[in-house]
Image 1 (cartoon, one colour):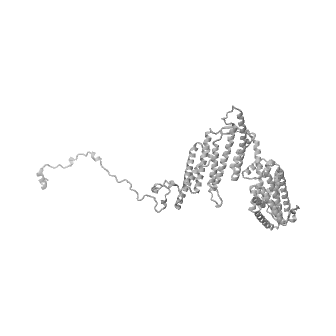
Image 2 (cartoon, helix red, strand yellow):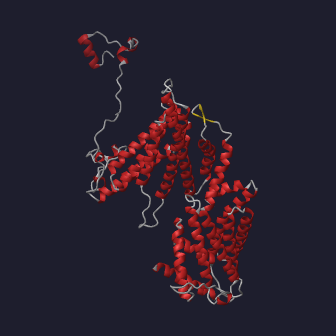
Length: 594
C-alpha cells in the first residue's frame, strides 16, 4: 500500500508538471501511465485480478484526494465528471482508471472462460463498460482546457478498446477499422515526440498489428495468414491474439488432415487413422521450420514447449487406441504377439519425435548458457550461469537418448542403434567437459585433469566411429572444436596449478605430477611435472658439469699392402764390393785401391 501511494504521488507530480504545459492546457500521459501501472501491479505475470484490485484502490484514493466521493457509507449518490470540473488532470485520471478496471476484469474473465464458457457473457459486458468509460474520457478531452497530445492519446485509447469489443464479437470489419485508427494515431505520435515516448507508442503498434492481420484474414485476405505466421515467429501477438492464432493454425491443419493417410519412417509405411495424429504430423514440418527461423530465444523456447505439448497429447491419444487394440488381441488367440503392429510403430515414431525435440531444446538451452558462461559477469552480486547448470541439461539429453535406444520395433535396427550410440558418446564428452570445469572452479586440479583426459578419450572414439556414419554428425556439436578447447583448458589448468602451488604450499596439486625426479628439465621437456625447485634459487635445468662423451678422434692409417708388394730387382743399380780381404782393406784406407 505504501508503495502504491508513493507511485500515485509520483504520477500526480508528473501530471502537475504537465498541467503547466506551454499551451496552458491540462495534460495526461495516458499510455505511459497505464503501461507503468500494468507492469508494476500484476500484468508482468498475467495477473489481471491483482491489477483490477490496484485500479479499485487507486480510484478510492483519487476520489478521497479530490473530494469527489459517491455519497457516504450508508447511501450511494452517483456523480458525473463534467467539462466544467476540469481544473485538475486527476479528474481525467479518474475516468482512465475506471476504464482500466473494467478492462482488467474483462481479461480476468477471459482467462476463466476457458473452463467456464458462460463467463463470456460477463466478459463482453465488462469490455463494453471499458469502452464506454474511454468514450467518456475522449469527450472530456475535447474541452479546450486539454492539450492536443492528450486529445490524440484519448482517441487512440478509445479506438483500441472499441476494437477489442468488436474483435470479441467477431465483427471483423469494424474491429479492423478501429485498430487501424488506433495504429495511425500512435504512429503519428511516435514520429512527433521524444525517443522514450516513441518506444511506448511503437510497442502498442506492434501489439495491434497481429489483430489487424487476423481481421483481414477473416474478411477474406488469404495473404494475411503468411504475415500472421511471421509475427508468430517474432513473438508478436500475445495474450488473446496468441490463442486466436493457435486456433486458426489448428483449423487450417484439420482441413488438410483429410488428405493424409500414412507416414513413412525407417523404411516402413504406417497408416495414420487417428485425426489428432494426422493434424500433429501435418504441422510438424512447419513447427520445425518456425523453430529454425526464430532468432529470439524466448520465442524459440515457447515454440518448443508448444510442440512438446502437442506431441504429448498425440501420444496419449495413440496410447488410448493401443489399449483397445490390446483388448482385441487378447480375444483373438491366433494373433502374433511378437510382431510390432502399425499402431505400436506409430507410437514409437511419435515418441521418437518427442525425445528428439527434447534433445534439441536442451541443446539450444545449453548453447545459450555456454555463451553466457563465456561472458564476464557484470554484477558480482547476481548469480550467473554455472557449469552445474549445463551438466543438468546434458543429463536430460543422455536420459532421452537412453529411452531412444529402447523404442519398440527398433531393437534390430543396427544402423539406428549405432546412431544413438554415437550421439550418446558426443553428449557424454560434453557432459564430462563441464564436470571438469566445475572441478576447476573449486581448484581440484587432479580430478579436472583426469576428466579432461576422459573427454579426449570420448572424442577420439567418436571420430573413429563416425567414419561409417557421416550423415549422423551433421546435427551434432563439433567434436574437433571440443578437442581444441580441452587442450587449451589443460594448459591453463597446468599453469594455474603451478601458480597456486608457488603461492600456497598447502594447495592441492595433481599427485601424479608431484613425483620427485632428479632428471634435468632439458631432458623431460615433453612431460609436464610440478617441480617447485624450478622457481627456486637452484633450479635443475641442465646437468653441470656435463658428463664426458666419446667423440671421434684423428684416424691412424696402417699400410698393410706393403707386405704383399714385390719390388723389382735393383742389382744393376747397386755397386758390388770387391773380395780383397785385409789387403784390400788396407789399400782402401790408404787410398791405394782407388
